[in-house]
Image (cartoon, rainbow, N blue to C red; front, side, top):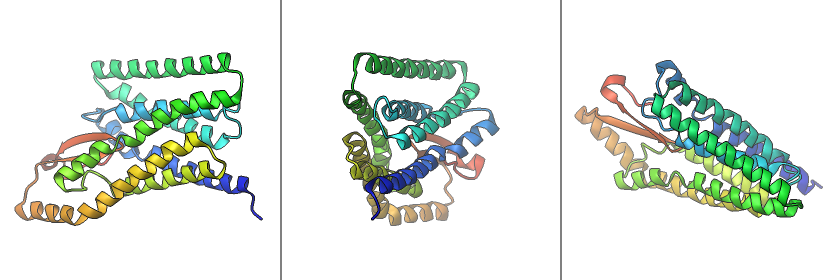
Length: 255
């Protein structure tokens, strides 16, 4: 008979793979930034949010906080490293004002996590209490990150178009949330289950919107092509958006 620990480990590895793919999904955006030597209108906000979220989960997964959570801190450690590379590119290719703002927020995030870790590890002396404190903080940040696509969903409902909500990102977000929810459910962990269960619901809502508005989106695209309209197209991925003049580039860019 297969043990629950083995099943949980396998599910956690699947969650790690999906999470890694999501962390890497903005790579085309940053290849474009590197080639153009400019961040243009891309926002660093999603990457700043993801980095502090990952840092909290790294702290949560440490053996001295929440034992037997290796798969939690490893993938989130990788996430911190990846987001730091993205933010480094923002620092390099932003103007002086943008560079200072990004650096300022990064420093606040690092100091905040260091302060949280210091307080928890010095003032709280049991892993159960440490888990509860860091877990509550992690729930807040993770739920906020999962809720960020709400702005995109509003655009979809308003325009009756899913052009701005890539299907595969929504599907991957759903798979990621389900995997980590299953991981948390096998060996009950409410601090992982709560935000990922919420994330699964948000992802389902996105997929439903995609099913509802897919045909109207195709009709809108066909109508624009028939009229020869070009105009501006806006693509939104992981909370970042950019407007490109299609008559200049010939196509939109997905980040």
